[in-house]
Image (cartoon, rainbow, N blue to C red; front, side):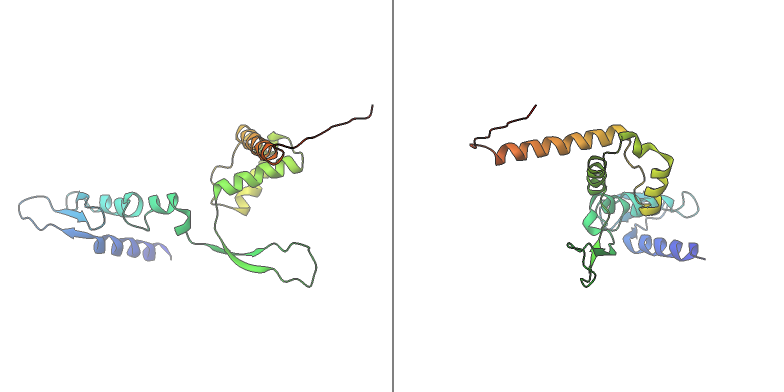
Length: 179
């Protein structure tokens, strides 16, 4: 069973990161070694769940808290992936790299797929697509809906338009059409 091992790991992190103030006659308090936050920690009166919650989720100084891991993708654990090979030949061996999940990069790739394959925006709201996303990347809790995909596609268009204007600045262009 995996539950006791997880519980022991959290308890050891809490006990190593909190100091007992040891004042008699008062409720026992603990001070976080990382940020200095004070919590009651009397196991008979208030329990220790507030300390566990603080260390696991809220402490901004503890590098492995959920708050810091969520806001700093570079610190998250990476997974191994094969880098795609350009050119495609069978003799070329793909390179193994460490990859991390990024919501921003995934949204951009989704918008590019919608544009390249000319899918309707409602494609992302289908049950099959949502199931596919969950199977491929369970960490992507809320894939974007059609309005967000439309905004992302519009942003790609605006960025491309700005890039084209910069590239063609001070250039002369003639367009002709046949009717």
